[in-house]
Length: 169
Image 1 (spheres, rainbow, N blue to C red):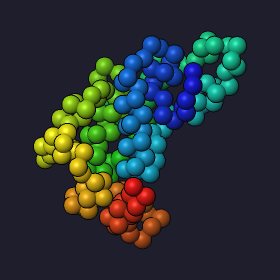
Image 2 (cartoon, rainbow, N blue to C red):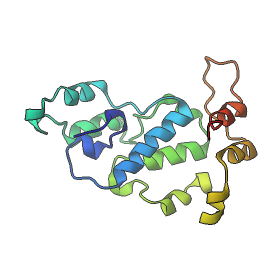
Image 3 (spheres, rainbow, N blue to C red):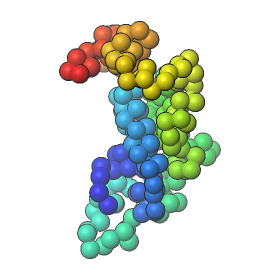
Image 4 (tube, helix red, strand yellow):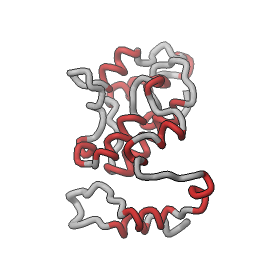
């Protein structure tokens, strides 16, 4: 197993066969970090247990699917307990994209650009691939006044913060 646990999909952590849906999970983790400044919380003891596996042990000490499901799902089975509390302060569209990318069951996770375009985040966009190639991230952020989660550490975050992130492009 190779990679950073924080970005690994549950099926990888369980040592199960996996496909490209794991990349969509990783995109969900990145989106969560961008929107909330926090990562989804997979219980630390599972990560410590997995990191302590010696190479000769192979996957014998990998957590079981029950353990992964137990740490990713909340008590009522909603399956979103692992998302940071700040997700509740996001717009419906922000919550929707995270829920659809960070779905535990890989077959239910968004697995294509077409599926991604059908979620509420893109409901007002009708873009062709030519249009996408001609757009600048700075223009989109400025035009749509994209807001990021406002952490209480800062007096006020503005759109300028998001625009400044793209100065190197």
